[in-house]
View 1 (tube, one colour):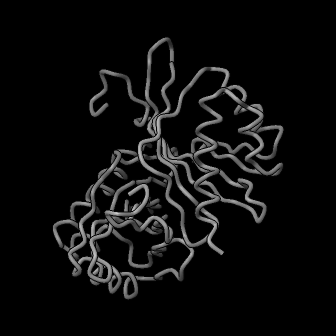
View 2: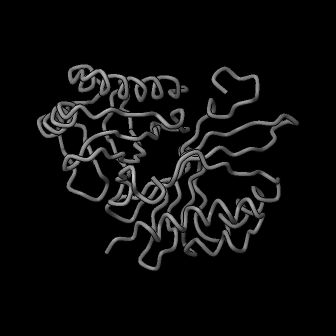
View 3: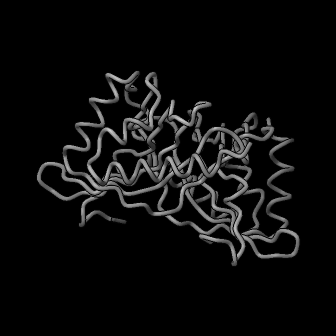
Length: 130
Length: 130
C-alpha cells in the first residue's frame, strides 16, 4: 500500500489548519496518544491533554506557517514537511526555520511529531543568513 | 553545548562533497558503524562497507543535490536538510525530492542518516506538481 498521498495530504492539512487558526481541525489529525517533540531535544508532549494545550497556545499566538518545499513521504509510515513559522518573540518578528517529521498510525492519524529546529533557526530580519 | 553550527556545517559539507563527486570527503563525515536509511522504509545500510558502496554508486552516477532550504538543527544531536536530487532514471531526467535527518555522535560524525522520500517524490519534468 502506498500511503504517500494520504500522508502528504495530512501534512498540508496540518499547515492549513494551523494557518486558519482552527485548533479542532488540527487536533483531529493526531491520534489521542500521540507524542509531540517540538523542538526535538526538549521534553516531549505525551498524549492529547499535553499536545492539545501546546497547539492551542501556539495557534492563539497568531503564528503562520510558510511552506518552503512540498512534503516528502517515504517507503514507510513517515513523512516530512519543511516550513518557516512567522511569529513574534519579545515584540520582534521572527522566522523559525523548521522541518517536521510525522509518523502515522494505521488509521492515518499522526502518532509522533518531531519538529527539527534549534536556537539558531530562530531568525530576525537582521539575522545573518535570515 | 550548542552543536547546531557544527551539525549544519556537516550537512552542507555532505551536499558539497556529493556535488564535487568526492566520495572520500563525504565518507569522512560518517562514523564507521553508521546506519543509512535511504529511503526510509527500505532495508538500511549498516556499517561502513555497506554505506560506502551505496554512496560510491550514488556519486558515480553524477547526481547533483540542490539545496531548497537552509539546514535545520534541534536541541539535541539531530539535524535536517531538504534538497532535490537531480539525476537520471531510465534515461529520463528526474528530481527526487528528499529531506534527510542526520544524527551525530559525540565526535560530530553522522551515525544515522534517514532520507525521507517516497515513490511519488521522484518527479519528471512533466509530472504533476513537478
